[in-house]
Length: 366
Ligand SMILES: NC(=O)c1ccc[n+]([C@@H]2O[C@H](COP(=O)([O-])OP(=O)(O)OC[C@H]3O[C@@H](n4cnc5c(N)ncnc54)[C@H](O)[C@@H]3O)[C@@H](O)[C@H]2O)c1
Ligand SMILES: [Zn+2]
Image (cartoon, rainbow, N blue to C red):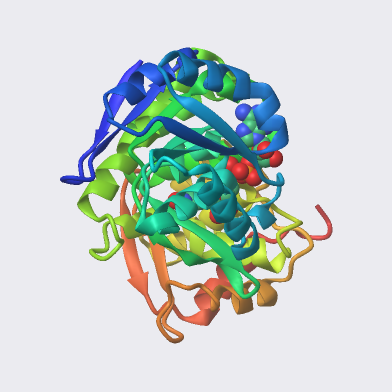
């Protein structure tokens, strides 16, 4: 079991990573001086799978438990579902001792964190991430929110949890596609910050795909501490430090949107976005072809696509201008200066982006 502190003054909290640690959750909560009533937001299948062990652990430590299930789709990240949850929460919260537990992947985590941030101007919440992506990324750092018709994550708040409790044993039931999607984010951390992690991923990829506890626990803990370090230096992405986490995401989001969120899931699109960013980095002379090939090989071995199919380059470039992080038409890219190092570049010319995207398109003859 590893404890990774995320230091943010009065809002500091721990990230716990371990294998088979769920029965001990209640004990961890004791130290946090939370209320007596746990409100667990989850979905039907995750409730069936993990609800009993989470509830037992909480009950043993003297808490009352109420579950709230929401649909298992991105649509749960909406104002409509948030509003239903908040009203239900208000009816449960008679004794004013309620706190929230997010039991699920990034969708549940973002929704539950958002509800916690606005209900009574903020009540405590705990992240119990169940997907690889959530354990290494979305549950950490306090970005909460829901989507609007106009775009993803447009309504939300920075609101930190009181604890992140990642039991890698829960990942056993993930589909292969979800595991690969999580690995895309792990590869991202390695490319931007950690050459040694990159080599570890190269050496242990098959073990990770098989969800072997040892390499999995190592990677989750390593990625969590990389994210914790970045967030504690730049919680609100105001100092250009947290920005590096967007590596592969500028074009990744555009590829996701251009594929109408159906062609590729987030991790797959980020994998392709990282490769496009590597192409740009090579074209600008920031890194060499060798680094690009290493990243490509790892992404491919992780079971992720390395060529864009069925989405046109012009549509991707058009979508990339909708990025909420751009000011006006000034784009912003995190590029690679070799594995472990980055450079942020603003206002990249359109031709450079288009050329890089074209290089990643699956040619019809292949
Ligand atoms: N807040 C942040 O910093 C941040 C960062 C990255 C992504 N996100 C958000 O996270 C969301 C994506 O998260 P995700 O990839 O976890 O998707 P998700 O929450 O939709 O989970 C993916 C699927 O896996 C299932 N699942 C989860 N845990 C499981 C388990 N242990 N066993 C079996 N099935 C399981 C879910 O029910 C779902 O069907 C997006 O909405 C994205 O915007 C947020
Ligand atoms: Zn991401």
